Length: 261
Ligand SMILES: Nc1ncnc2c1ncn2[C@@H]1O[C@H](COP(=O)(O)OP(=O)(O)OP(=O)(O)O)[C@@H](O)[C@H]1O
Ligand SMILES: [Mg+2]
Image (cartoon, rainbow, N blue to C red; front, side, top):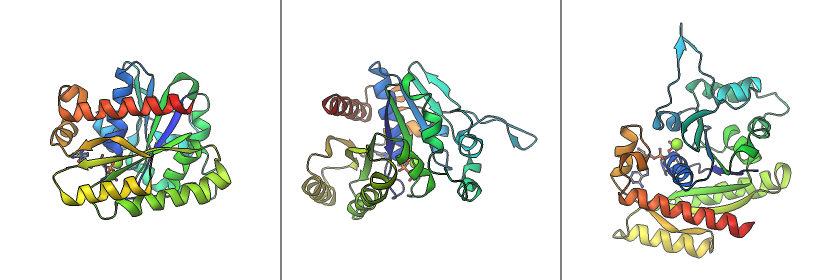
């Protein structure tokens, strides 16, 4: 069975999608079978991997995660690369919150669709939108672990983590998914020359001892550059510092999973 890992933070632009793509790809290059799921109506992961969503007469014909939420369709998996598969999203997902509002199983849509898929992979990453609503709740219901990417250069880094952990510990773990555990907090956009970054780093290490990954994802221009040309960092610049940062994070993730059994 796969480790199913939610990548979440209510704060926007902290590197959730970048981490889903590049951590997932790094693990696939190490020989693991990886699936990444775009669970965000913004569909940035879908665009970032250059997955085309086709329309005919204004109607979408490529199945996406929307159809999983709406009709219980099996996961529409696209092969991006060897050992690296993805489930795309589409902007109509925005409306689903209201459309499934009265469904009794509205928080179990992803979990149910992952049941038959999970044995086929080592890692499944679920990229969440910047909110803790129905999409993130579905991801957390299905997950064995979660990762919180946190932008170092932000005074609000701490509250982003507190909010996510409050939802998980007070609601998800208690009511719906008692097996979910933290896998780690990853510091992104890191610039050690900046005093704020060093202060936030020290603060988070003190508050969440043992959870903060040793790897820092540095603030590096190669990352938006790769995003701009819809490539992961390994296809775009495999010898760059950014690629090395994500390789290092992948090693730490695999180590923690092995240690946890
Ligand atoms: N380490 C980094 N250094 C420089 N730029 C980065 C880094 N990580 C991400 N970015 C850029 O910052 C922007 C936001 O990143 P990303 O889309 O991964 O954040 P997100 O948390 O998924 O955002 P959202 O909350 O909107 O889903 C993107 O343009 C991305 O290319
Ligand atoms: Mg995103």
